[in-house]
Image 1 (cartoon, one colour):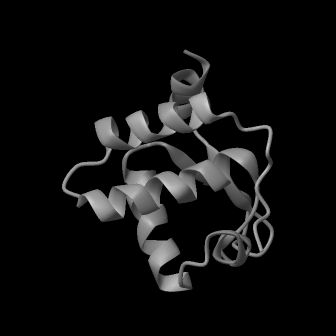
Image 2: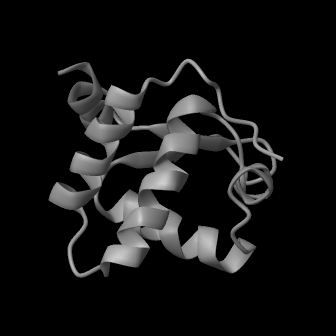
Image 3: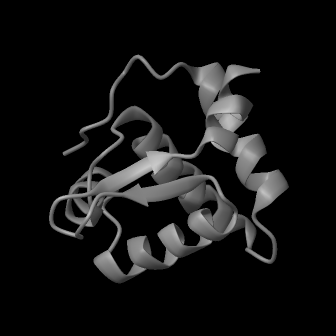
Length: 101
C-alpha cells in the first residue's frame, strides 16, 4: 500500500534523484535508488514517521532508519517535533531550494 501523493511530478523525481546523487557520498547505486524512493515519499508526505514510510516503501524499519540517517547527514531531511511519537520528517530548506530550481 502506497501513501504517496501523485501530484509529485516525474520531473521532481528526477530532481530528487540528482540531489541524492550529488549529496550522498559512499552509497552504492542500489542504496541510492532506495534513498530516492524514500526521499520521494517524504517529499510527497512530509511530517510522517518511520512506520508510515515503512508501509509506503515496503522497506524494513531498520533499513528506513539507516536511510534516514544518510538523508539527514546529507541535510536533505530533518526531524521536527518534540518527541519521536509526535514529530515527523520534513524536507530541509536546502532540499526545498533544490526542488524549486
